[in-house]
Length: 399
Image 1 (cartoon, helix red, strand yellow):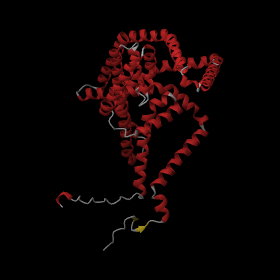
Image 2 (cartoon, one colour):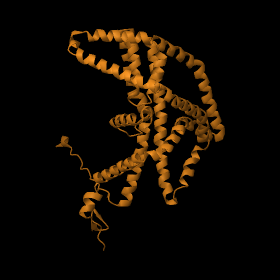
Image 3 (spheres, helix red, strand yellow):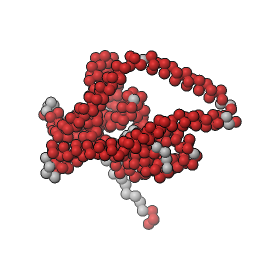
Image 4 (cartoon, helix red, strand yellow):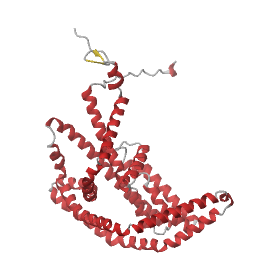
């Protein structure tokens, strides 16, 4: 009669001390994988000159690809629904395009004139707002409890003035040389606007076939695993894009309505700005509050209180109702991790990093967990721990 292998053994043989303390140690495994990733990043940093053409290529196609991807995730459920109802997919794609076109025409006809007028009003009144804010700041500084900080404040003002002056001189000196970059940027934007609808059309029409085409390049025995990975990545991205844009829409709508109720000047522009910036999780609404608070401070203390009340109500509704219902916990990313990712991605890639940092992190997390699960399966080092049976609670009430 054969004896069963002991717990913590492999094929009935005890694990060596090296396997127990190193190979079968999760901390060591994660550390080695982290070091490997850092090594790969270091190698790529040393051969960055070889990746220049690749970067230039993606700088041209990046904008239309990202925008087409966003619209794809927003419109694909509609096209898929029409396909299930018996409408051919290419017909459903054209119907979706017509709906988007009608919405754009409505936006240009209704919203654009209002946004234009309020934007012109902000630009026209900006000097007056700046002077009023400067006067209020000077009055605040002249209070007795600011006297001890006068020297430090003057030094900060001087340093800030010198920094801004130096930056302006640098910009002016580089204006001529930068004209080529501006022309190139406008050209890339024009190319992106033209190519984005074409990319979006083929994504909607044949997007469901892309994973199958992609899997043909992999060995047969790996296709199921890679297909599952692609499915998880697609789910993460689609849930984030649809959820974040939906939340941003409702946030902008709440701010527009709230500003209209309290009689806030430039309320539509400031509300739309808040909705757009809400694409950046956690930070967007706070960033959008800066111009609103400036306008409210110059208007009156009562208006400032009203703006803060609108902001508080919006944050409560967004945090307790909209975000949990729309986003839920699908990304399974801790808020502290989100802030850390945003700060890091924003520092490295600017505005693009703020917008794409979270979905990029979610994709990397899915990829890492998939690789780690595969490693655990083939290594045989992560043995299942026996389940600990919970003892029944004693009923002290009967004693």
